[in-house]
Amino acid sequence: MKIVYFTHSLVSCWNHGNAHFVRGVLRELIARGHDVTAYEPAKGWSMENLLKDHGEEGLEPYRRAYPELSSTTFGKRPPLGRMLDGADLVIVHEWNDHDLVAAIGERRKRGGRFTLLFHDTHHRAVSEPKSMKAYDLSGYDGVLAFGETLADVYRGWGWGNNVFAWHEAADIRHFHPPPEEDERRGLVWIGNWGEGERTKELKEFLFTPARQAGLPLDIYGVRYHQTAKNTVRRHGGRYHGWLANAQAPEIFARHLATVHVPRRFYARMLPGIPTIRPFEALACGIPLLSAPWDDSEGLFRVGEDFLMVSNGAEMAEAMNRLKNDPDLRRSLVEHGLETIRARHTCGHRADELLDIVGRLRAPEPLRSVA
Image (cartoon, rainbow, N blue to C red):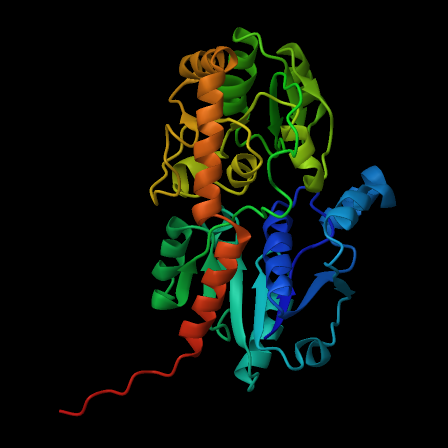
């Protein structure tokens, strides 16, 4: 099958978490023998910020980790005829320009012989619904939404059975436990500061309990303004700046545990969507602690795969338990790995994608005649 994916960026993961998952899925599809092409806009904001902050050297971790992946950039007037020629499946990510999304849909309506899917991996359907409704998806065969609650939003917009919950997952070719265990110390949190949508939660579930538990805390991410950096420092944490996602496994391997603090939109308005960080952490064999979110789809075994707490006091207690109980750490690692490998790898998501395409391509059943 010839598969074409239009992403915001495959090369840059600067404030662009979807790149993690797309890299893993495309690599899985390539390994299965599919002809995969990725396109990304020239001078996309993620790539521009990465180069501004880190130069070409910032691209090296991706290039080393994913030698089989490549992407082609396009300008303001992409040659869609050539780009879509011979495609069997085309997927367009929702961070693409409205005009491009519409133009690809128009190609499908004018006789394009490919299955066309829109891929939504963000909270904008509930946080900025006007912007999302402005996308012209009339030429699309279906929507891939990264959770059932987001899929329900699209069903409410009229997509019915042509919207599919397609969760993110771990690329276990890259995200796996270290081949040899070394000394682990303290906590690590990998996440972006953003626009203040979880500042209160970070203080309650990460900064304060880590200090109370006496655990060193390392922070990686982008968009930390000076006030944010001061907050980290005031609570005894160490801010290290941006981390290429390809380097996350080696950072996880140095630490005793990590923490998941979901953004407010996911915790309150799109429950059941954990985003990709917990998948990657569990795949790397690091114990995971989590602030509250509703695992409404039963993706994990809460309490076995990771520990979820309700408030900051419970988080401090859980951190102390992990610090002092190697058997608990070992149990969480074993159960977390078991769940990821059984249900949440990019291989599983490739299977799901191919099944979705097969269903959309299947002929309509013949209606019985009374």
